[in-house]
Image (cartoon, rainbow, N blue to C red; front, side):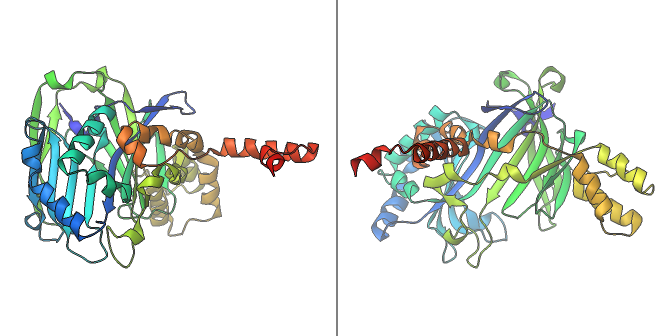
Length: 399
């Protein structure tokens, strides 16, 4: 039995090979957008249509209403929630809508989209039916929305977590983890604008998961406030030896801290209509060979073997064992052992394709694809050639 969190269900977009000649795929794992109503009339019509949504989507989707005040003692930013999933029992959640903000300077509507749980055609069907059921108000609301969180899943085949030491530039916190009946993982950065989750998975996208034996495992642990909680972990009878393994690098880009708190426009990642032009977060990934450990042992024989896969854990161990902060000698070791696992710019050039894979509706709302650096440089060379040869451009000839 294996935890469902460590099984890849859907195929991603092929984005090339790493330097070890293994394939890589990428997809959008989570998208949260926030928007405002154009006026009070639109707000009243939208919230009234939400009340009738369960009836209008009957036998097509499961619509579940949530009172967010009963969720926990910590007050969430929105009072009302509505979850939409595929019709049937134990279907995964596809989309959530939150309304009635609790705080000022917070957008009136928050929408969470889970594109990894369906196909592009399935997401188009959901959004079109949802827009029709909401009196055609959903698409205008999305057209002026801003992004507060986007999770980018990069799957590196033939790679394991313990083959390297990992880090994220400017990050501070890290934590090693392993889900019950799962595979090892590493979290770098928690509440920062960019965080990274690394964990091993197996590719079950070519397997008929529906026909396999399933189980539910109850876990008793602590929540983020240190209080006892019980949660369910879903298990599937899938043999990891029979499927290709991969390392999931999940980059979470979320809203920046600001005076107005979460879900305010001041802390947005980007506007939804410029999502394809988002900055490349993959460039901040740092990867080091495991040989950095033996190099440090040869230099300072007191250094022990770390129990973490993060490079910062190695630095903290060095400080604990030697009583010194990391010096130039240790920095040279890290510089010498740093490796480029893949070309970050080449992979990121496929970002527009990943957005298009979410469906035609979302692709149309996210704007045009940005011009690549290669296209810009080629155009610059052509302009320089014309200038040196004395040829005039088409625009100059018209003037």
